[in-house]
Length: 126
Image (tube, rainbow, N blue to C red; front, top):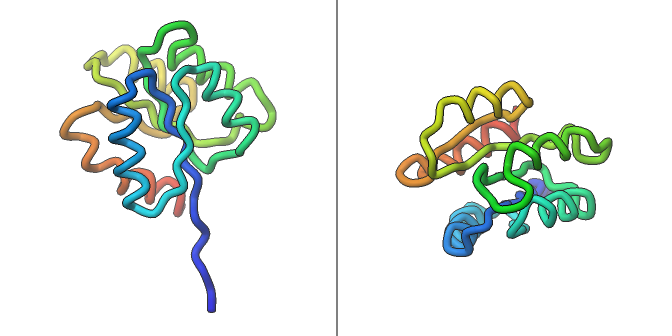
């Protein structure tokens, strides 16, 4: 019998309600979900657990999402992990900056979250 790999997703968001929502959505889709409440904690989790993909909020106190991406991309163990930026703010500049940093996708919180599981599946199954 062959078992499909269970992918590990790291969700980094300072909003506990959003963190719980994303954890529920992704767990229901059979992903192993790790969570972090700050950019610093997200970097530590990424180095320790080597997730297959990271869902990262842009607006966080301390180390924001952009600074977190820069740090993740500068670390040998984490620089190839695909990152999806997730934000409540509709700022086209943030999306452009994120894409220039090598983020694989960008999703807005709210109704667009319905497509998150499909986006993750497409990225991980390339």
